[in-house]
Length: 235
Ligand SMILES: Nc1ncnc2c1ncn2[C@@H]1O[C@H](COP(=O)(O)OP(=O)(O)OP(=O)(O)O)[C@@H](O)[C@H]1O
Ligand SMILES: [Mg+2]
Image 1 (cartoon, rainbow, N blue to C red):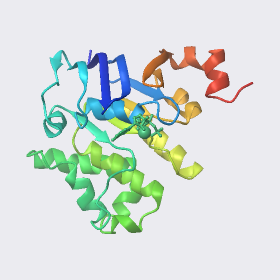
Image 2 (tube, rainbow, N blue to C red):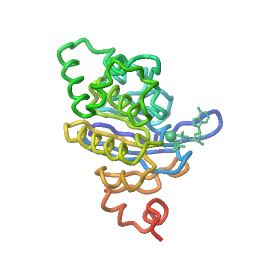
Image 3 (cartoon, rainbow, N blue to C red):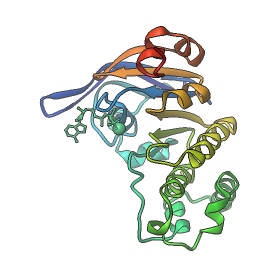
Image 4 (spheres, helix red, strand yellow):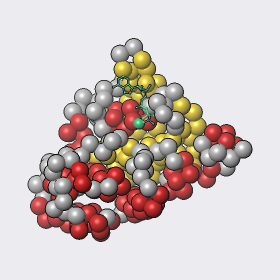
């Protein structure tokens, strides 16, 4: 097993945002987390990347991540593309991408990964010297995903990559994410677009009020009446 969570809980002061969440991700697997606003999706990704303290078990390939600071988790191969992108808007596209590789010393492999990011998102190569704040929202999302890839993840955490993005770019971004998985990287993606998530993910967890409400393969959940009504708008 690549990642294993058992009874993971997170509280913000007195408010419990995640309660006893158990979840697994296999090597190279694509797992989506669905759920409404405030369900705890971002909190779950932050707990995994250790940018938010949690209780319970959190293991990568059998090794506990508890006690590790966030930068050490990046070194272990978990890269987080956070909600709201968190780019450096006044730096260029290329500088933002290279910041994702700041822990790496393998210059030749970094250069190769930059070529891989450019082949996924050709527009980024064209815009390499451009200041990030002048890109469209969809292009900025590509930079954020590309930056996370520059950390050479074995697990990529993506927080709502399609939010606020025009339909055409959204399709392009989801296709690129699928290709990232096909290249061997496991993915955990929080997403509100249930239809797209069920189309590209292998398995899905549904978070509701900090609990796992339902889980199953995309095919199982796509055929589930409750999911169809609550998340796919089928009456
Ligand atoms: N830093 C924080 N301090 C206090 N409460 C927080 C904090 N971050 C999140 N919360 C609360 O924790 C709960 C879960 O929030 P979270 O951001 O994980 O939800 P989400 O599923 O990602 O929602 P969205 O789809 O809107 O991004 C919410 O009730 C939220 O208000
Ligand atoms: Mg969120």
